[in-house]
Length: 191
Image (cartoon, rainbow, N blue to C red):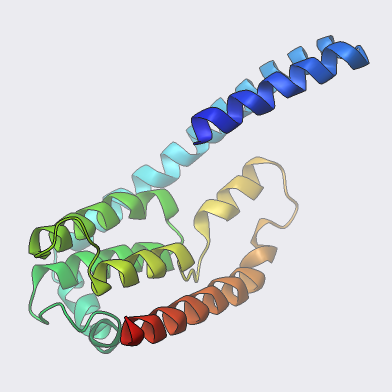
């Protein structure tokens, strides 16, 4: 769908630029945007490498087991269908910790691995299980204590106080998580 929407926006922008006589301005902004995208990607690359490495170290130590044990009551509430000693709990825990640390893109591979493991246990391959649906909701809400990705973006764009968004991020992500989880639990009981 996005591969249709974006080209339409681009075409409309160029048509508007032609009729308003601002073709040069739009061409300049295209090249400036490309430069900004490359700089931002390089900034993210360093952040992602650092946190992906830390998560890999945590995975290879007993830290994952300790984190899984700390998250056990939450996991039991959110994912009652998954056996407690399952390896899926570790994968979900790693994903949740990465999201809590605000790692965004570094959490994605962990989330995909957890979803793949849940799909392997799924008896109906063409339908989501309740645990899979809840996992999507938890990832979409993505409670973040340290929104490192957003802070990195704000810092790279020259913000004078890039960490000033921490409290609004806490409010927004906790509210989204509570609303999503509550709605999912209610709908799971009905259906």
